[in-house]
Length: 405
Image (cartoon, rainbow, N blue to C red):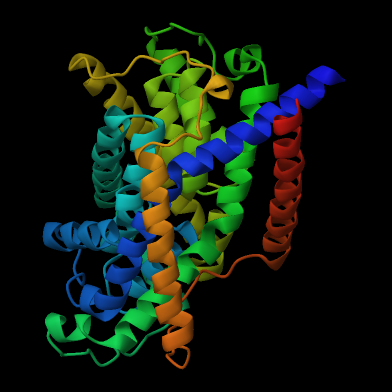
């Protein structure tokens, strides 16, 4: 029993330490994302994404890059763009870019996994778009696309704000919208982040290495060489593992770092990170938007693309000798709380968070700001909320044990 309480204390301390390490990165990323979403409207995006050519795909990728990393926000925005006339392939490019190429995700990955994985994330995100574009051109699902567009119906374009950007940046009303959007970003992800970081701590403290060696074959500390069929198994099991955690990419990054530390291949870890759009909640939302035929086609499209992209990344990085070596460091034994640059960055960005919330909900309390979200399952959201509060209780008791043990 003493061992259990020690593991509980270690798990809670690790979860809290992970979050402390990443806090400033979350705040910075969501501030940048909120500013862009207020000052760059969907209508401005849609006017540039109306055809299926390379320029439209490139612009869809660019707009996704500067958008929110929340999967549910990305699903709603890509649906809205498609409904307003953007081509299907450019909407898919936007969806993939907004969940794989966003700034905040790269910052968090750099903290937990290092620069090689950041490069892999961005190069892989581009590969995902290229693979999907290629598959769409080969399969030519014109009937499915038209059925999906008919299902959504038509939409009138809103009037654009023609004021110069410099004028819009000086508007207190716009900064109030930024504050509200920033709060909305946290509202969208707090459950995922809480559950994800808690699971990462629990797994690091309680789950033996043998479990990962069974789930991902031929893994282990110091393992660097993997055969093709081993890599294929890893990139297929990666999405399955992501499905079982049912949390978004931002919350999954500590788990990805844990997998890599346990010896899972670079390809398997990248597939795990790329898998936030092939889980059941996303499939259900796509079915609600476009119908089940299109939802299943998108599942095939995205799953095929992430398998191909992950394998290509692994072999490409291996050829260039860029695949990092697992440190084999026990995450439970790392010291997370200390006076260093992370401490001062967290303090600074917490103050900035307070300023934005003040602008949004005190000075701009009468300012209206609404961003469409994908229709979430009430039952799933209630389940996630209950689990998040259970996590808070687990972490609270665990931190007390950490200081007592």
